[in-house]
Amino acid sequence: MEENFLSLDDILLSQERLPVRTECVFPRLGFLEKSSDSQDIPEGTKMELPLWLSKGLYEKKRKVLSVELPKVYKEGWRTVFTADPNVVDLHKMGPYYYGLGSQMLHFDSPENPDIAKTLLQ
Image (tube, rainbow, N blue to C red):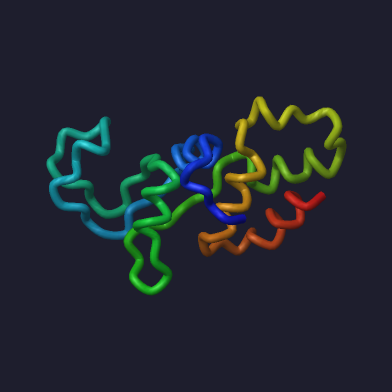
Protein backbone atom coordinates (compact mmCIF):
# COMPACT_ATOMS: atom_id res chain seq x y z
CA MET A 1 0.00 0.00 0.00
CA GLU A 2 1.51 3.30 -1.08
CA GLU A 3 1.47 6.26 1.24
CA ASN A 4 -0.18 9.46 0.10
CA PHE A 5 1.11 12.37 2.15
CA LEU A 6 -1.76 14.59 1.01
CA SER A 7 -4.43 12.19 2.28
CA LEU A 8 -5.91 12.96 5.69
CA ASP A 9 -6.49 9.25 6.31
CA ASP A 10 -2.81 8.50 5.68
CA ILE A 11 -1.76 11.35 7.95
CA LEU A 12 -3.99 10.05 10.75
CA LEU A 13 -2.79 6.48 10.11
CA SER A 14 0.82 7.58 10.52
CA GLN A 15 -0.07 8.89 14.00
CA GLU A 16 -1.22 5.46 15.26
CA ARG A 17 0.95 4.40 18.18
CA LEU A 18 2.89 1.13 18.18
CA PRO A 19 4.41 -0.69 21.15
CA VAL A 20 8.21 -0.73 20.78
CA ARG A 21 11.23 -1.78 22.82
CA THR A 22 14.49 0.12 22.58
CA GLU A 23 17.54 -1.95 21.68
CA CYS A 24 20.09 0.76 22.51
CA VAL A 25 20.35 3.88 24.67
CA PHE A 26 18.69 7.03 23.30
CA PRO A 27 20.68 9.92 24.78
CA ARG A 28 18.83 13.13 25.75
CA LEU A 29 15.44 11.78 24.60
CA GLY A 30 14.07 11.01 28.05
CA PHE A 31 11.25 13.51 27.50
CA LEU A 32 9.63 11.00 25.10
CA GLU A 33 9.12 8.55 27.96
CA LYS A 34 6.70 10.26 30.32
CA SER A 35 7.03 7.69 33.11
CA SER A 36 10.76 8.29 33.55
CA ASP A 37 12.64 11.21 35.08
CA SER A 38 15.88 10.26 33.36
CA GLN A 39 17.43 12.40 30.66
CA ASP A 40 18.20 9.31 28.53
CA ILE A 41 16.02 6.42 27.41
CA PRO A 42 17.81 3.23 28.55
CA GLU A 43 18.10 0.05 26.53
CA GLY A 44 15.14 -2.31 26.91
CA THR A 45 12.56 0.40 27.62
CA LYS A 46 9.03 -0.42 26.48
CA MET A 47 7.11 2.55 25.12
CA GLU A 48 4.70 3.59 22.40
CA LEU A 49 5.81 5.59 19.39
CA PRO A 50 3.86 6.81 16.35
CA LEU A 51 4.04 4.69 13.20
CA TRP A 52 6.02 7.31 11.27
CA LEU A 53 8.74 7.47 13.93
CA SER A 54 8.84 3.70 14.36
CA LYS A 55 9.33 3.21 10.62
CA GLY A 56 12.05 5.86 10.57
CA LEU A 57 14.02 4.29 13.43
CA TYR A 58 13.53 0.65 12.47
CA GLU A 59 16.45 -1.03 10.73
CA LYS A 60 16.98 -4.76 10.27
CA LYS A 61 20.79 -4.58 10.22
CA ARG A 62 21.35 -2.18 13.09
CA LYS A 63 18.88 -2.91 15.85
CA VAL A 64 17.78 0.47 17.23
CA LEU A 65 14.32 -0.66 18.29
CA SER A 66 12.07 -3.65 17.91
CA VAL A 67 8.40 -3.20 17.10
CA GLU A 68 5.92 -5.42 18.89
CA LEU A 69 2.53 -6.34 17.47
CA PRO A 70 -0.47 -4.40 18.71
CA LYS A 71 -2.94 -6.66 20.51
CA VAL A 72 -5.50 -6.69 17.67
CA TYR A 73 -2.98 -8.37 15.35
CA LYS A 74 -1.90 -11.09 17.78
CA GLU A 75 -2.91 -14.72 17.45
CA GLY A 76 -5.79 -14.53 19.94
CA TRP A 77 -7.61 -11.90 17.91
CA ARG A 78 -6.87 -13.68 14.63
CA THR A 79 -8.67 -16.77 15.93
CA VAL A 80 -11.69 -14.60 16.77
CA PHE A 81 -11.76 -13.37 13.17
CA THR A 82 -11.67 -16.89 11.78
CA ALA A 83 -14.44 -17.98 14.15
CA ASP A 84 -16.98 -15.32 13.15
CA PRO A 85 -15.72 -12.21 11.32
CA ASN A 86 -19.25 -10.78 10.96
CA VAL A 87 -19.53 -10.11 14.69
CA VAL A 88 -16.20 -8.27 15.12
CA ASP A 89 -16.40 -4.46 15.05
CA LEU A 90 -13.11 -3.42 13.40
CA HIS A 91 -13.79 0.28 13.86
CA LYS A 92 -13.89 -0.24 17.61
CA MET A 93 -10.42 -1.84 17.46
CA GLY A 94 -9.04 1.03 15.46
CA PRO A 95 -10.37 3.01 12.52
CA TYR A 96 -7.29 2.13 10.45
CA TYR A 97 -7.22 -1.62 11.05
CA TYR A 98 -6.38 -2.63 7.47
CA GLY A 99 -4.01 0.27 6.79
CA LEU A 100 -2.06 -0.25 10.00
CA GLY A 101 -2.01 -4.01 9.40
CA SER A 102 -0.46 -3.52 5.98
CA GLN A 103 2.10 -1.11 7.46
CA MET A 104 2.95 -3.68 10.16
CA LEU A 105 4.14 -6.02 7.40
CA HIS A 106 7.16 -3.71 6.89
CA PHE A 107 8.52 -4.74 10.28
CA ASP A 108 10.32 -8.05 10.69
CA SER A 109 7.97 -10.38 12.56
CA PRO A 110 7.48 -14.15 12.36
CA GLU A 111 3.71 -13.59 12.37
CA ASN A 112 3.69 -11.48 9.17
CA PRO A 113 2.34 -14.26 6.90
CA ASP A 114 -0.54 -14.90 9.31
CA ILE A 115 -1.33 -11.19 9.59
CA ALA A 116 -1.34 -10.84 5.80
CA LYS A 117 -3.66 -13.83 5.45
CA THR A 118 -6.05 -12.37 8.04
CA LEU A 119 -6.10 -8.98 6.29
CA LEU A 120 -6.95 -10.61 2.97
CA GLN A 121 -9.81 -12.72 4.36
